[in-house]
Length: 251
Image (cartoon, rainbow, N blue to C red; front, top):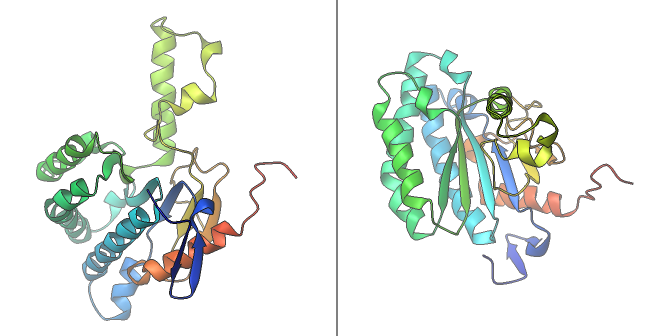
């Protein structure tokens, strides 16, 4: 966690006491970033991984408790085989190269989504994901949550099915189901509420991301494409958050 009360970087002063506990990011714009440079979309995804590395380190430096990033949605399998293959290759490369450092920094990795239902041929990626979670499960530092093969609607349906089965089995009664019990069946169980959602590249939609968890999150949209979203752009977003008046339905 952070030691100092304030952090000043490139003219941006952040009061760490006002920073969000849990930041979620929709990392959008890798393909457009590459196309602007006359390069294939896979080139943009590789640059996006570099941007992610910087944001993870900076989140840890600032003492942010949890960071959830949207890496690959349940709908992204519709993309070309070439692009999906490049993304999955980058995923394996990332965990192969970065896991030891993340572990040394006490980062706790959690995968949000149904990684057990990934297509055949991705067994190495699945093994890398399971190994990352197992190795870092007891770490007490930054909680890094990677949404992979994830869909917000699918997550809600999954939680409802689990609770319905428990009612059917006589473990609980229908009237026992409240918001806390429902949240306990989500992939994000045990994490702090999402305070702040950042979406890059100018898009204005949730894209089936954390539909239940974002109920009272503050939103921040920027035209910056994800590979260009560096720690200074992140600081600007966080500064905007610290100036928000969060009312949670009140006045």
